[in-house]
Length: 380
Image 1 (cartoon, rainbow, N blue to C red):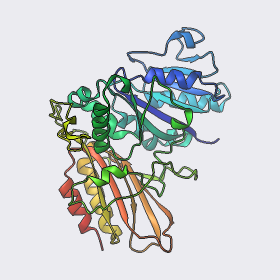
Image 2 (tube, rainbow, N blue to C red; image 1 turned 180 degrees about the horizontal axis):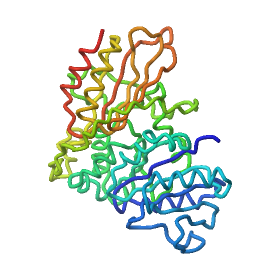
Image 3 (cartoon, rainbow, N blue to C red; image 1 turned 180 degrees about the vertical axis):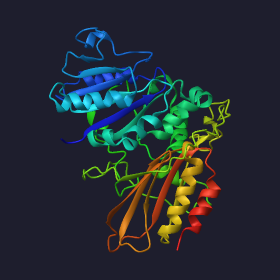
Image 4 (tube, one colour; image 1 turned 30 degrees about the horizontal axis):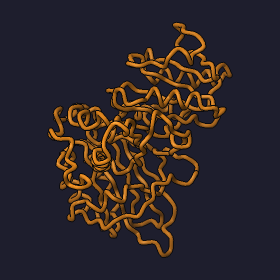
């Protein structure tokens, strides 16, 4: 049986996750979708699109989709769904997990990599984060969960942009790009998003393309050796999705060393600067890029990344790299979520292609200098 693609939908309270879900469910797309809702959701899917309001864990919807609430843990729910699909008791093609407004998507994502049974049935496709433009500045300042959700995203949807000025929206987009330069941003109205922008984004694919917002690289501080990287925001070719081999560097360092108050920026309206390009907010969720045209020494790099993940794993949200490794003609691709890191051999470097290693790290108060210096020392 082919793997069932799964999408995690996360976002701020009131950002319109349910609106977006309803739109996806009601669009006449002929796809059967299983929706998994965190039970203590503030805004459950309205009963008008459910066939019956029952106490059943799994409810059939009027359009053939199914909906279930998580009563136990996610793992059990996913296993139940997969088993029922195998037996032909349930018919669905993909799964969408809607997390509550304050959930951390990290553990949800890790379930797909750490649990062999889940990994045999499901393929994690991407994490979508919905951001409410009107309340974003306040929420990003006040809530670390909101900042984490931005850091985890493969795709960011900005809702309610009609309620803010153009300069406020630009400042928000700039701020989000600094927290997560990997995720394309799309301004959406009332959940009007086509399915192509929601499904099969392959955000967790080990693919040889590292999408980074080109504007982000332009205004990086000069000491990151980074001219620019002209990557488009497209998605990778539809190669066979490959979750790679997840090495679990998990040594119970679950005590997150986090500053709860995080970003101190009382003035969300720092638009006086033209496009808000001089960002005064100092969010604890930050990203940085490492680039080098020298090859990496594989053993040194593996030791260094293993050590970093051991110490900073809980604070590392997403990281990815396409690397030039000594001893192989192929690109080496690695990515990770928290303590879980996977790597794989990619395609051969093209004849006239510059062999440049590029890595992007997104995390909470990561020690940029230590990481950049450490990576430099792993070069041949």
